[in-house]
Length: 456
Image (cartoon, rainbow, N blue to C red; front, top):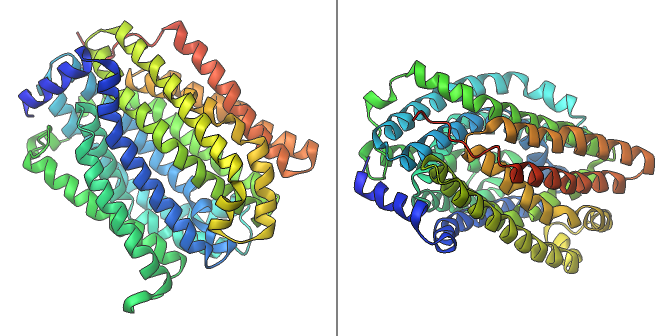
């Protein structure tokens, strides 16, 4: 580990101007998120040219894929908390060892996820109540994505490790490359342009898998060559059962929380499919739009996570709380502006993806009954990031499960049944964001997260 470089980053994060440091860390993450959203929008745009069934395939498949990936994400979150807090405590050697152990754990775990995911894919899609028109497209898409899971996991580990040390620029450069490669490959493989095979929905999945594998190889090369703050070696990659135990202890609540979230979205997909393909296609486009807005808010929340992690490690709890409060305010303002734009330009935005009269009609309900809640989700996201970065993963797990399982799924289902219309589903989803944000903020104010998890 490059001690001088890391020490300088640490000094700025735990002692420098909060706003300036937050912006410095956040802007590469925002660019990264924007580029990722650009890919998702492009994917939706090209698949929309094939039809509403093809457009719905990735949106149908991703809750199930995310269910398995989220388990690994929980352990990556734990590794992030350990590495960032060791750096905050100036224990750079332990930070480097922790990074190596996390990377090897992610490699092992991804192989299990690939095998099990391929095994249950068809059964899971049937459970999700996927319409017969969408089912074959979703199944083909999901099988290709699962084959590429090991590359996605190691790319996740790379991104988390560099963000923990305060380097938000290097992962962005790699992710921008992978996303632009994906954007270029999408139409070539979907439509068979320039002599490429015409693969349709499978082409979109192949483009995603291939691009992630390139990013994973580049990230691994930089880590093993010591070109970034962290330097992995064969020695640091050796299984460390003691540290694995720590990662499991801290990461298990996050894994349970993330996977429960993902499973919740599988159930939510099933609920929305009760109302047919039009409802789910509208939901898929809405997801892309909300992801676009969250590109800003989530980038700021992730930068805040780095600052909170290192300040908690340095036992500067008041400063960590101040950083989090500023982030919540910024998120609320950004998402309020984004929501206003979607409300005003709704017809033009939805028509851009697919010119379908029924979907355009359904979009009125989504915007009217769900969009109002998005600024509150910015607060919820920031609070959840605070708990995770401080290593108090049980709190983020409980908060996430409360929003989804206690509020969103019951409200979306019951209000949908009571109103006998999708507007009840969208209203239930909106109410879950607002109530979840208020509960999360009150828990944050209580301050029980202000305690580091690393040994003194």
